[in-house]
Image (cartoon, rainbow, N blue to C red; front, top):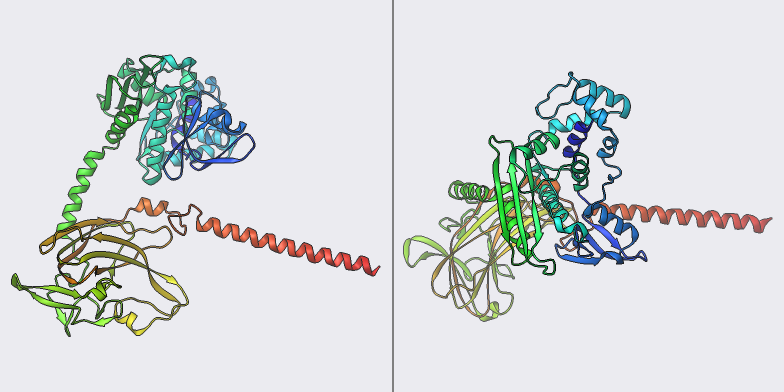
Length: 548
């Protein structure tokens, strides 16, 4: 059944304690974050904020020490509770017997041999586990599979740091982290699974291992498409920074195998070069990021050229009753009618063109400033938009805001003005700002026309931006700002993977989700009710005792 174990190994990919709370020997929490490696007797973690932190291994609790050694060391035990646990106990004799079974059939993925007799036997012995494995094999057949090995590191057999294993762990964690935002590769459930199999099968890849031999290991033993392996050796045992380094990332689904990235023996001046240069380049090649970036850029530029401008009247060529079409009827903090502070005029440099003229004195410029809004236009969360504006500043500072809104439940009662300006507010619901992109335009030279372009992506941790509008703002002293050709176009579709993985919480400032808050409130309410009931029942018992 080893064949089935290896299938399960690739069909289950879990997050390894991304927000683990690390405690000292007294049980006090001292850090929180994802395990990265054990290096020089210290546990390296990445905090939820993305920062690195090192904790001496001996200062941790026994449970945390054991966890760190299992994940980052050479412990060959299995992880309880995973699907692999069911399969790991199978003997090599069972493996050979099932591999020789002629009734095995091939499903949509020809590499996944799952016979009906295997499924029937598994269903009888362990419920529907093997049926689930087959279902998952069909589900994940479209994805390529990657297996990463511990790098050969001959000198670390008596070293606590275990640099060879750190390299294997590093690639596993990087791909696992990428999979959280966009699932692209199937990987082993943990590096322990890979080490178990390599130990059992006496597999020890190194840069001198022939590609045809590695193909057998990667495609047959691990049922994968791509293999990552290599070697890292310290040049001088007393110098920590200088290493000799080898690495290979090879796709064996091609014939002959396609070398995605390769490092032939290179000597580092600093250990940081391994991750900062070579591992980073390997990940870029593995995900083909340069080619994808070029393709994405081409699509973005095509969308920028063909998609419609979402800002109605961004060229200020049309008016209705003296108001630029697509813009509000009032301006400034005190809601002054259009015509004095803000007005549409003929472009002095081009009599066929019209522009927006805004002018204010120091009382306004040094006070609230002058603001003027466009009418709302539709926005999609996680889609990417490009803003472009042409403007000229004369003595004052301009800022352009793209404000995005969602409708939320409130006790608000809308005014007639709210309907006139384009929002769909109604009693009990109000459109409120949940995202803004702020473009500072005051660093451009005075008395010249400039074109400013910038991309933005509306998103929020709790709400969903659905409407957007432009706010033109000027301040700081007295002067004039001229505006023309304001464009907002969608250049990239919403990120479905990001939306699917969105965990609702109040803001970026907290990691506590709304679901967790609701659960805490529920438990608190239940506890209060229980205490009140116990107090009432206790009081009733006391009254009965006094009566007697």
